[in-house]
Length: 508
Image (cartoon, rainbow, N blue to C red; front, side, top):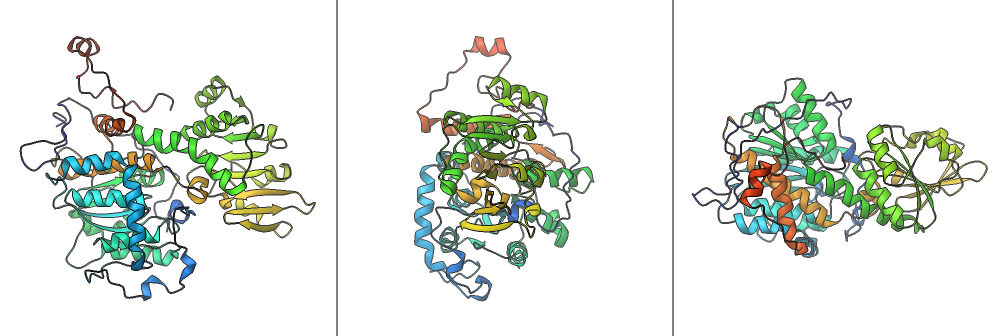
């Protein structure tokens, strides 16, 4: 039944967070056929380079593999595997800084701590392990959950944060610079443990879900649901659903409006300049830049570069996005029309082979080439690894590729995700994603059995709006309330949801 839709963050009668009674369709996205193969050994995002500038530690500081070390925290617990437990104090400070910029999670912790809406939840998680995700993990724990955690990316772990979590009693298996074998070993240590079986999955990229399907399919009998954050992971879930192999409900957090807008548009608007400045110290004023793709990421990149005085060109395949680019004042071109004259090329299409060798052969000397899309398929980097071209590592994540005539291009992060490889992502943005994940876990864990079938669901609009409202006090923002008469005129409940479930975002 799709009747009263409430998320009760309580085991008693008092409801801390309640969504108004509202007949809602929990709309399922139409299942899409994805070209990504589910059985790939490791998702693209897992091996993408993701170096945190805030991290104190380098994986090279101690060559002993964490798997060969015996470490215990101050309470004598050894159920973790990290680089160095002695870094816990550094990590604790990092987490405390992140808490300042994650107001919604802290509010959720405060409101629901007494009610323990996740009491009895055993969550196995596979995400980036940074100060921001540590705030999420500690929030889930405060709400009653037990957690075991691995990293979804071999480069992204902040070792000192992992140490702080291990010191705090979390079973964390992750360190910066894991091998692929380590990566799967860590996931297995999270899942395969005597006397503990997960009943919820929080995944980023789909590798954890894939591993359980492959190795421990019987575990799904006890699992209530999967919450997935990334494009890649969502693709894999839709593939499972289409094949009739999805045996538990899954929540697609990636396509919630707040996640799309903040992670993609507003985040990239700030981090594109940050990534380019840190790697090349380039001056943006007057530079000619081509941005491939005008989705949310492309819109963010273009807005930032235009504001800095760059001359921005856009390439696009979709006539709607193309028209938006024109109305926003950008010249819509084909890449081959401008490739000889531009100073910077930025890809953000989510596609493959957008910038191929033929284009790179025609670029001007000193052209900067980088990718803001999800995986490292957009720039054909493999085509540059030929005998006649010389590679020079200039600094971390910056390569000069030199042609026989002396022309060079500047390739950033070997075509991997620029903002995660070369700079950091604003904590406030991650607060929105993390709060959405927490609410999705609470909803799936507490939902009556008949509410969700074995399919992929979008987060209900009411929850999307709630996540946004939790962030408003940070700006001292004051929402206007509808009068009864106005609400009746619009046919809305005064407390929302204010948008239909199919609404994605104004400029999608």
